[in-house]
Amino acid sequence: MGRTQLYRTKTGMTFDPARVITLDGYVFRPLYVKRSERLRTLLATRRLDDDTPLIAARLGGGETIALDKRQMSYHHFAQGEQNGRPWLISF
Image 1 (spheres, rainbow, N blue to C red):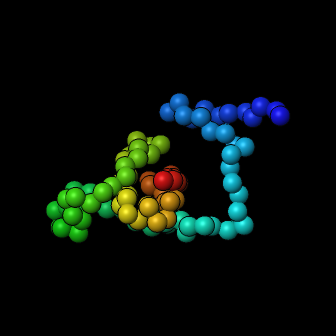
Image 2: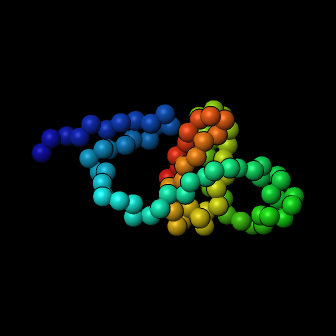
């Protein structure tokens, strides 16, 4: 059996394309983020509880995005655009 080419990400993790499972459709619907708000504003206006579990990721342009972990546990993928740059996060 031949050896698969592994690809290394910028953070040092490896990705093995031979382990990708492709399907004819989504198992989970991706979360399409159409707009975002500052975390500080959501907390100050009490539209987000202090103890809401979040997943945070730094985007390519240096911005940080935080997503509700409960929503991500259902969707598993979120994507959107920040300052004209597309992004995708999987969980």
